[in-house]
Amino acid sequence: MECRQTRNRQVCNCTWEPCSRRGNCCDCLQYHLESRELPACCFPAEAERKYDRSFEHFARLVAMGSV
Image (cartoon, rainbow, N blue to C red):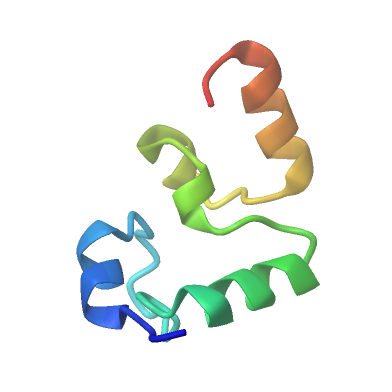
């Protein structure tokens, strides 16, 4: 599969500026799953800015209907 890093960077909502994985979704996903987290693209913008990417935070957002 061809990596679409240039296109991915245009739609990536990650606000963590020093992130070296921006646009490289497979590396980003692997990194976050190893930490029991989800990547920024799974969260609405307001929730993403809090940098709580935990499964638990995502579940709370789903329960509230925010995702």
